[in-house]
Image (cartoon, rainbow over all chains, first blue to last red; front, side, top):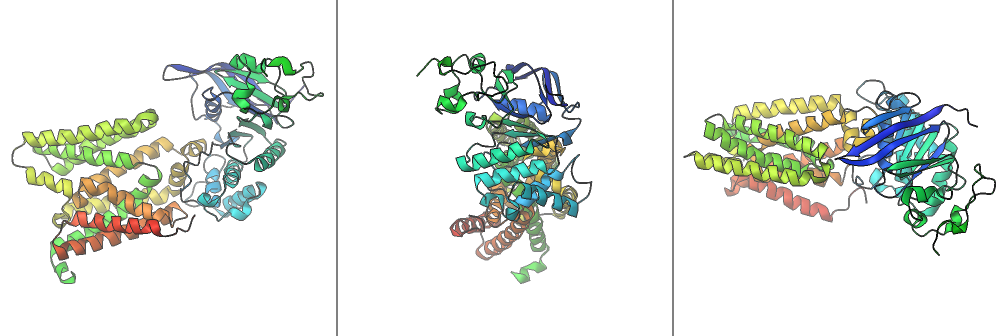
Length: 273
Length: 267
C-alpha cells in the first residue's frame, strides 16, 4: 500500500478538439515517486494527456491537479520534455542557452535583463546530471539525437520540478543510448515523479512502476507489467504489434514476483501466431 | 557615389537603406526561425490592398497600407494560433484577396497608376523624411522591447510549448511580433517594393544562420549583411541607372548562392 502524496491526478477529464472527443472521462491518480509509462496508438490522446497535465491545453470538463494545484496555478511543479522532432535543428542556440530557458518563470530566474550566475550554475549542474556538461558551449544543431534529448531533459530539470513529463524521449534514439536514458530516468524517480509517453513496450519491464494505456479512455495499471486483458480493453485486438511493431511477445512476460502476481500473462492471451 | 551625397534625396536614400537593414536583420531573423515567411509575404501583398483602398478613398496611401495590413496581419496571426494545420492555405487566400482588392480599387480610381507602381517595385530615391522618422521610431520600439524581453523572445522562438510551461506570454509575443512585422513590412515596401520585401527579410538571416550560435548573433550578422546588400545595391543602381530595389535583391541573391558553397561553423 502506498502512502505517498498524490503527484498528479485527473478526475472526470474530457477533452474535445473541433467537435471530436479526444479523451473521454479520464480519471486516475499518480502517487509521488511513480515511474508512469503512458502507451497507446497514434492519435489515441497520449500527447494530449501530457499537454493537459502541463496546462498547455484546457480540459472541456473535469479537473487536473499537480500536487494539489491546477497546472496553470503552479507552473514550477512540472518539468516538460517535449517531443524532439528535429523540426528546430537549425535554430542558433547553444546547449547551455537552451537549458537556461528552463530558469524562466515561476521556478526560475528572478526578474531582470540577464541570466545570473546562479542560473548559469544551475544550468551547468543540470547538464552535468545528464552527463553532457562538456557540450554546454556547442550548438544544438551539432549534437546527436541522444545528446539533444539529454539537453532537453536538463532544461526540464533545471527548474527543480516535482513531476517530470516526457513526450516520446526515446524516439529515434539508438538502443544503447535508450537503455542508458531509461536507467537515468529511473534514478530521477527517487527525487521526483516521472511520467513518460512511449511507443516502446520494451521500456516497461523492470523500470516502470505503472502503465497507463490511452485510447480515448485511460486504463491505469499500478504495476510495471503489461497485464492480460489490458490492451484488449484499449484496442479490442492484440496490441503488441500495434505498439511494439513486431517485438517478440516474450519481452512482455510478467515477472514471477511482480506486484500484481494474481494476474498471469500467458502466450495464449493474444490469439495469433 | 560620394559626391552624390550632397543631394538630400541621396542622403535620405542612404538613411533609408540603413534603417531598413536594421529592421530586416532583426525581424527577418524571427521570420526565418519562426517560419513566418508566408505570413510576411501575405502582409506585404495585403498592404497593396490598403494602398488601393486609400487611393480610392483619397486618404494617405501609407495610412491605408498600415491600417489594412494590420487588420489582415492580426487575422493571419489568429489563424496561425487557432487553425495551425491549415494556416498556410488561409494566409494564401488572404494574400491573394488583399492583392486583388488593391488592383480593383486602383481600377476604380483614375490617374494613380504610377503611384501604385512605386509600391510594387519600391522607390528608395524618393523616400521622404516622414518615412525615415517612422522607420527610426519603429526601430527604437523593436530595440527597446527586444532588449527588455530578450530571454522571453529567445524561449518563444526556440520552443513555444516549453516557453508556455515556464510562464512566458507566448500568445502576446506571437501577436506582438506579427504587429511589429506588419508595420515594418509596410515601411520597407517603400524601399524595395512589396515583390522584393520577402527576399530582404529572408536572405540575410538565411546566410547568417549558417554562422550563428545565438539568435542575437544571427540578428547582428543579418543587419551587417543587409546593410552591405543595400548600400552596394544602391551604388550599382545609381552607377548603371537600374531599379535600386531590384539591384539590392540581386546582390543579396548572389551572396546567398555563394554562401551555400561555404562550409558553415555548424555541420
